[in-house]
Image (tube, helix red, strand yellow):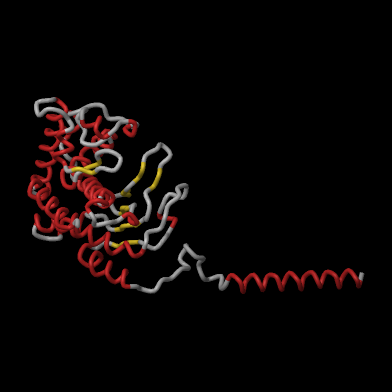
Length: 297
């Protein structure tokens, strides 16, 4: 009995020591673990630039430090290169935001309706259906921008930058129509909306009255693809990116049904911006084109 008591006491002592070691290794139980509130970061020049350039004037927060919980956990993604963060956001301000400010005369529209949280990702997101996600908006408050590590101001390497700006205009367009819906007449211009839009090439979509293949996904996607394509252009082939006029020319002759359908959609977009947001869309388009041309090297 005495021997059994000694063994029991020894086991209790060992368990107590192990428990003490584990507590010391993990730190205080009051400290949240990494990724759940336990991580802290010192402010850097990047943080200061974001605060001064986006948070103060536009009420926008930018998350560029890696946080997997902000993203799809079943996808392989790459963190953004910190050296690319400020240049890419400077490009966004110069090419996407400044034309709106110039056209409307203030930051008010962007300050109220631009997404309030930007999450930056270095790579694109490759989806299971073979498509690539280049931007994503959630509830009109958060936008995820991919391809940050591909940023370049060089014209010959500008396709990914143009796609980023296209995404900004696309997602801002969603927020605007979610606040005030566009004319229901838009949905009657073309049929053929499909969940398998990714099986159609962009060039083929234009011959069916859609400015991009993704525009075939739904009337709302069609509407915002018209906005973004008119302002910054759209994809044309695996690596090409062309302005709206060149995309439109692929729809067919100016008297063809696909061409006229796209022009009818264009008219609704222009009317919507004029009557709902007091924006001269053709003037905004000219300013966006000038900003892009002046920005690229």
